[in-house]
Amino acid sequence: MVPEKRKLMVVGAALAAVVALPGCAPAGYDAADYGNAAEPASNEVAASPGATAGADPEATGQADPEATGEADPESTTEAAPGDEANTPEISEELATTQLTAQKVAKMGETVQDEDGFVLYRFDADSDDPAKSNCNGECAEIWPPVLTNDGEPAVDGVDESLVGTVTRADGTKQLTLKGWPLYRYIGDKKPGQWKGQNVSGKWFVITPKGTKNLTCLPKISKPVAPPADSEAGGEESSDSGSDFSY
Image (cartoon, rainbow, N blue to C red):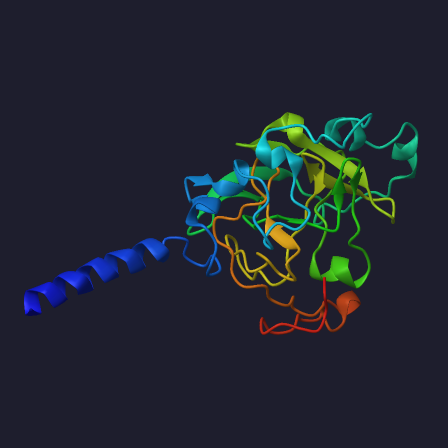
């Protein structure tokens, strides 16, 4: 009987290991929906319940049947003729000069800036036409990835997917397949991705512009904006805030 019990324990452990494969994916979700570090599932599958509110038609590789008569994201991300003259100049410290495809532990494929910080996309934005809906305090928590010319150097990212969108303040924000790009002030060092699934609306973006759902922690609250943004005050702790951005 003892050997039989041990056998059952081994089988149970093996099943537990299979269930644990998704890592930080929520319980009850199919592991196949989350892929792995080498090939993020968000590049291949359509919406996963709950995790992909506002899922993208591009994730299925099929055209959106309801998107009739609309232009491609690439054609809508450029500023209209004449806008360049009114576009504020971005300082060198704020302008993003590099977009790099880079794999990180557990998450897999990410897009990073020249300093190695992971970039995100926001479900409340739109990609066709490209539009950023993160302004004010939201933009203090999620700084938009700004540029002066909309053509940063790229490494591992398809240059044809990179564009810009003019923000409410007139600055140009980089887009990837139409989705505006952001950093997260909760990421304290290169390679971190603490912004994943914040408010259930923010997700690491892949080099193809889709959400990376390889690792999906529970929905968390964002950090608070800097105490004094003009004075460069420190952000709040990572324990979360009452902000919904």
